Length: 124
Image: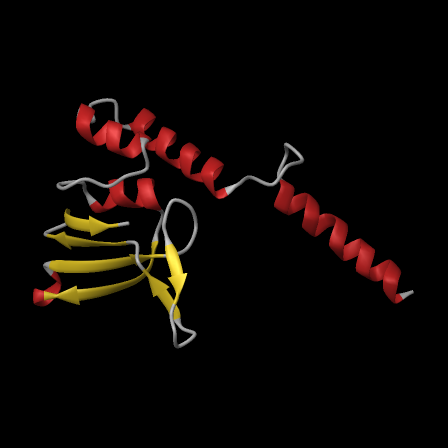
């Protein structure tokens, strides 16, 4: 009887994860859709920013909203200079790059520094 209950829980869970299409979306697909939606909602976006976003890259001067559309939400952030500067660390979902640290804690190599709400610099 316990295996029957297990199947009843598992099937709806898998259906929810798969979505309507019956397939689980990859990080690439999710990121691509997020970028495309942002660009569609902002038709006046300058060509350089649009191109960077379509290549899943950040560029100097991007807003925090554009960075989130391109890279996803940060997993951690640090504030400096009374919040005028923010340092964001991105997780290991694509297109961000991570590697394990020697101490077993996460090592985030993909990060960005913002000043007054705009990308100052970044590293993949």
